[in-house]
Length: 276
Image (cartoon, rainbow, N blue to C red; front, top):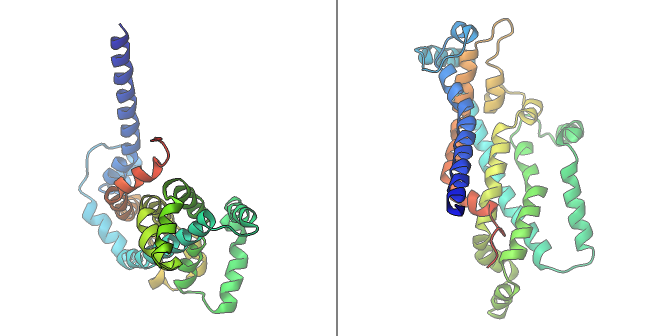
């Protein structure tokens, strides 16, 4: 009897997970379907099968915007931002996790406090600073702020404290290794599950960022993919099929990153879930 109840609960759990997966997949499926439909067809109703307007929608996109230039601009911004964020956030997290200095906890909580401040709140001041430094219409102000990533520092610090013993660092110091050698050769490789997890979230955030490029970039050839897609919408006419296709193109890199680094994502999110 107990076994039957256990089996029923397992089946119900799998049924719930399958239902949840279907709910998650439906928006992506409808996005792909609508990208193959015309504006008239989309306004008439919901379709579950692909249409024959994919090429026409793609030609509309090429006529209105340079989507592949926007794709390249997003790559130029997102990849260096992720790399800088991963390195410097891990370095900061290592300092807070393994070094002891006066006011360490206060500084750490101040860094965490910056997570509570909406980014949009400081956008005007940041724009004014970029104007004074001559950085407007440049990729630099969209990349450099990611050096300070409070959420990544918090997550990686927790991982280093729980998973990397002090004895390993002490062994390196006894062998004559310097602090940066220990960081680059020991801490970085061992903290990769946490770094990979947060790097995925950082990449998704930078790839989908709309407001910052829209404010800081003036040249159309430097616009990122979200800005380019927003420009597909016309002043007097909106072609939803072309917009859906543009969004589908922008989602592909995110899906590839998540699929390729899914193992790192899962291992990072389950840190501390099992006690040995």
